[in-house]
Length: 103
Length: 232
Image (cartoon, rainbow over all chains, first blue to last red; front, side, top):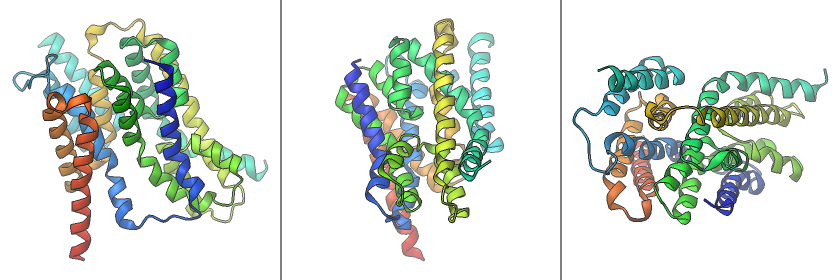
């Protein structure tokens, strides 16, 4: 990796934060566009979450006896019930370790 | 204590509880940076130059998968596009500030700082120094992020690879979405994104699966939002 790539990524990130503060005097987004932008995490994060869970190292679908799927389901249940970020990560990781080291 | 310091302290105090999940996230990021072999300087460099946890992990993941610079750059931009919303919402409260202030505050306008300062601004419109709240909250996030990154770098050089810590990437992002689990429309958007990414991982060229699935899911989100307003 080149430092230049890191700097470009830093610049684009900074611009997403600075541009609106610099250009706008007041909020111009209507409620509809705000609603749509509020979906951005839900639209992007699963694209990061899903492939490493459902695909094996060779990139083919791995649905049988996959400890990551089971551990992720535990994490989802805990997240749904507790709404606690740390509890969700903790349960997901410990159940994953339990499945790969103990079972 | 004068008003500026008071407001600054209030910003630090308000954002502190939100730092509890940020800290392990930073450690995980640092560990992963070391595991992927980009070294301590670049791992910390990303935290200082980009200063956006989710996008930093996306960058690492795409880089280790052999994605091109252009794909990495646009994926980072896509992940961080949510800041456009933060800037637009806060612009009303920051518009009278000098350019220097806008430049500094923009650097620390991250999710957690936005959340607490936006609600403070709404309640304290008359406070002439209300921007000190964002300064305090933002630099608290910055400090915690850098410290936890460094801790992760240190840990990353001793943690064995067998622990499967790369799985924590998925878990961390999953945990960041827990507030969406109870909303039916958000679940649809999440499934669209995840399924397209999984199928597209091998099919979509240039490792552009994150951008393609995110855009598809956003189109679905747009449709869901538009049909919702039509009904009213």
